[in-house]
Amino acid sequence: MTSILPRNSFVPDVFRLLETLPLVDRHIMRVEDYLDADTYVIRAEMPGMDPAKDIEVTIDGDVLTITGQRTEGRKTHGRSEFHYGTYARSITLPRGADGDKVEATYTAGVLQLTVPMTSSPKAKQIPIANGAEDPR
Picture 1 (cartoon, rainbow, N blue to C red):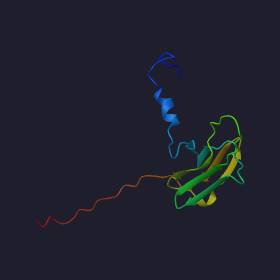
Picture 2 (picture 1 turned 45 degrees about the horizontal axis):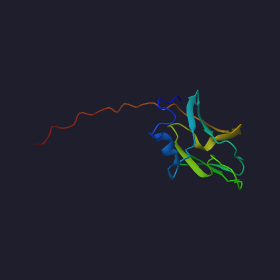
Picture 3 (picture 1 turned 90 degrees about the horizontal axis):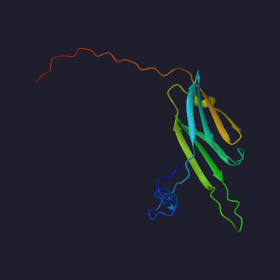
Picture 4 (picture 1 turned 180 degrees about the vertical axis):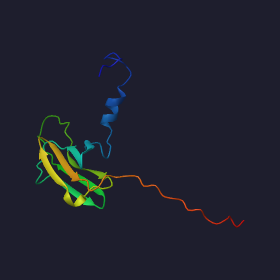
């Protein structure tokens, strides 16, 4: 991104200042999801993790939760901009998703979950019956 302010400006870069604030949940797991024919697909960026030890996927009702933990391998000197700790992302599954048949694969730092759709979610129109006269 090109800055319109000169490098030695007296005006601080607000975005850089925001990055230094001690926020509780600074690292948000980035995900993408889409419907592919009869399958709901969720992809989450989780680089540098061991899926057997560092990643957990759970389903509670229609909510799928992905949890990851990256442990710090800090050196005594230097700087690190890596995010360490535990973070999670919960996604509500669409109607018709079969949460009992979720499959997960981890390739090149991306966790991919596939959820078969048992039926396509369709809107249903409710008929309105003609009631009695208003007693007022």
